[in-house]
Length: 79
Image (cartoon, rainbow, N blue to C red; front, top):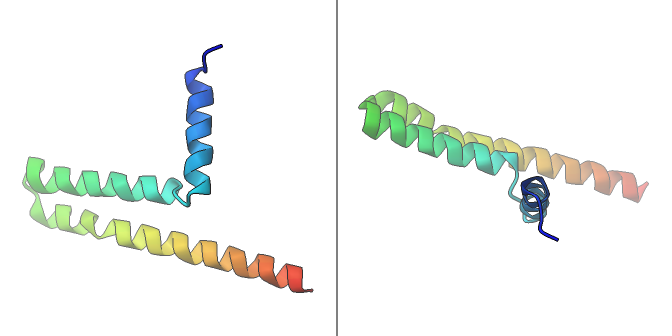
C-alpha cells in the first residue's frame, strides 16, 4: 500500500524533530531566502541585511528554550 502525502509529511516532521530540526530551522531557512530575495531581487540592500540577521536570533531563541526545557526536566527528575 502506498503512503499518502499526509503520512509522508508526518513522518518527515517526526524525523526532523528527532534530529533537532524543527520550526526554528524552517523559519531560519525561510528568513535567509527572504533576505536573499530582498537583497538581490528587490535591490533593497538594507532590508535584505536586516532580514538576514533574523536566523541567528531565531536559532538562539530556540536553543535557549530547548536548554531551559531540559533543565526543567532534569530538576523534576532529581526531586
